[in-house]
Length: 401
Image (cartoon, rainbow, N blue to C red; front, side):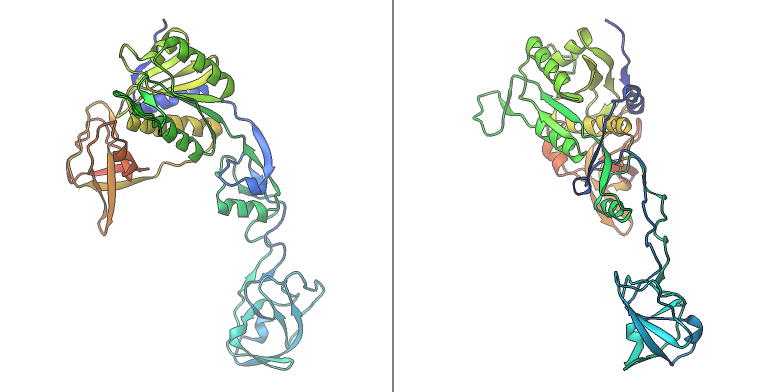
């Protein structure tokens, strides 16, 4: 059995995973389906936006030099409407053109007077305030033709989708969604809704991990919980490796007699490392099963979720070439003592309260890694560095959940 790196600092573990990035395919999809996807290439604008000088207000297009003093009265010679403007329309001295928001600015005009600053009498308009050379949107001022509007790896938010449309793209090149398998292990696990016998518990990890996969924009494949058996586990690994781009397991990675995930990966898989210096969640492993990358996560509900956030998410970001989801970190002052560790990054669950002096972090729940309620009611995870005190009053970093 080959020696593998053991009990690594978190960043070293992440760096090792990124030496084994997945290949991610690209697909072109309709813009209506592109929300929450990851852009596969830089996206250039097909047009200038706006494509012509246009008005930012309803009012009158005028010559600035005619209207520097108020009041001033001009002849109304035409109307310019959005999508109905006359490209040959020219404005001369003493003239004004009624104009609608978004309509082309006629040649010769260099200012727009808002309608509320005007008095109209037949074909005459009196401007009740001096004009300024403003309220004109210049051609290409938002984005120029061929300019990059969105970058490879960008997460496509609603505003990004609007930008795609503005640039003239009906189809968008995106990273193909990954299929991520989820396997929970343990004889004691039962699906929610079934009757529990003595010693049994409801299996919850696969549901939380599936939600994390969906949050990242990928496709979870949640397999039934696997009994503590090398043969059954090996068969399930084979299925997941064939059907998925990546799979994660929950449970069976520690040092116990029944921790078959670790034993199977040590003897038959391609193990890259085992154990990481974080609390909770120190037993995870990473490797490959029949050339498919896999993460072995701890079985305790909090630990499986935390390890996915801290280890699997950076691996997916690096494989895809995106910064999404960005880690949102705030500074908060501890209201109570938080137990830290000498050699691990400590990730305690805390709630946050915003005050005039900044955030206050509290630890209202017991921190057992089996207490999923302490995670579901938390706002963030402490990022206490090895040896950091965690004393009340200390200003610390908190990773928002």
